[in-house]
Length: 332
Image (cartoon, rainbow, N blue to C red):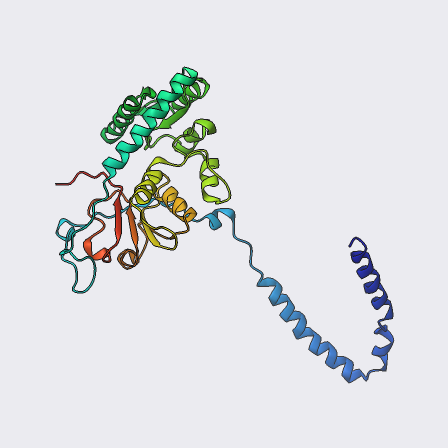
């Protein structure tokens, strides 16, 4: 194979040598014919020049990656929150839906984890440790953190909490994360999101050690989740919970059309990636989708994680669809 390029070069050189010289033949042509050749060559050269000018410049990396525009959902008006379904379309309100009992699933999982922690403590004398970094005083974030600490207590996991004021600097948060990185009794670190607007969220999350990134937000964990041939160290918990509910309920995923409403890195994005690993056909709806109702009505499974109350209505669902609502919005 190594001699093939050389042989091709020799053949090309030989063909060039065999080509008759054009110079002497030009003098045998009548002057008028030579003039005609020049006239014909001029438009060809001009056309070649135009072709060269039409060459497009390649797109910049920022253009290829697309604009960074946040999803801002418009809350539906109260009057439209639960409209009657159109005739012959949407869900049949006369039929009785089967409720997926998430509480019983969670109870079984906690029981299994508590047993594993007890066995670990008996075997090595240590228990897992979870550290949480809470910045600011958002009521929803404080509520989430309380549930996490309570969950740790129920199964015997050690929990540590670093509470920082909302006006602290970014470096203070990174230093707190770094201390937990170096603490051998801490095996997992969570930075409660969202962070205050003046902070670089990506920088803070990237400061978490890959081996302790139990939220699964590290770029390497997300990348490994996206590649079916690889296995991430951790999967984001909300996405994992959605899949656990479907699997525990015996819902078939392979080949099914699943619509995920919302594409946040906390829920929507990792859920869509996890569903693709189960060979589901996934549609993602976001704030810029022009026909969300039409797409959703075709779906076998709908996972709503947009953070907007009453966004999905009965007319959006086909009969027999499986629905998981990830939202925690307080409603009247």
